[in-house]
Length: 379
Image (cartoon, rainbow, N blue to C red; front, side, top):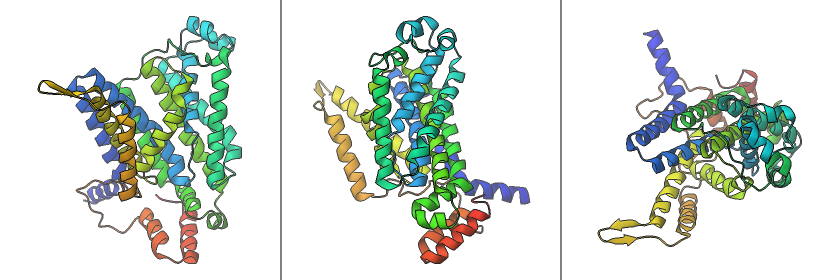
């Protein structure tokens, strides 16, 4: 009886990643049953974007600093995996400037994907050491500057990246199930970080940076940790994208990708993991519906089609309406939990934090948060 109660309490406290995972698994199963190649590609693209936007959430949602530069990490991951698992002939022809051992070595796609994520995380550590010392709009502009610099370098370094030409010959590896597994890993990793003491310390700096520093939080160090972790998943998304299409180009990882993924996070709910996943699903579904309407649908003997550009216009209108009527996103910055479970036990550490933010006066609030941090964060 005691074990059953403990298991029930655990599931009640940590149902969010389970529910989100079940939703993605259901979508993958629907794609399997549909047996439609176009719908299957849409689902794979959705799952890759889940990996990327969940990575965005790890940094933006917990730190409160908006990053415009994560598309650079996706590009770094995509090209890094291409350097590793393209055939030697392709690399010698398109990228003769690569080191000789890279030209001569072909790495299996799973290994190349993981190493690509690590490469993006390492780059994030190097640039983040300076950027994370900034706050607010200054940090956001710095991340955008990083994106511009990386884009210009990759566009002009012809001997290493093939410049603005398309890199081809990347082996097909990303299918529905591979993308699903990586998306589930990203969700659980983001959740574990969110409930850890590191996530708690970073969220205290999001609410009040000065008070967090006074409580002993290393704000720069915590931001840098989240920045590198989010870059790792952005790099993984880039590698999955490269193995999905088989070709990549610099233009695919610039402003369009930056703003559509940020829109997904904001529309879903900027400060919640559930918002990241729900935002990707809703915006991806809307994009696909508008795309099909642009192609035209047959109604009897008549074909009805929206004019060109309706996809962008409809997407913009939908996002504006969501932000007007749901200013905190579709999820209201709340986590989705198992609908049949109700928490009846003593409130956990996360509930204590929420109460500290909403009901306590400023001085006692930060004393309470400091106490929680010293006790080891959220269990």
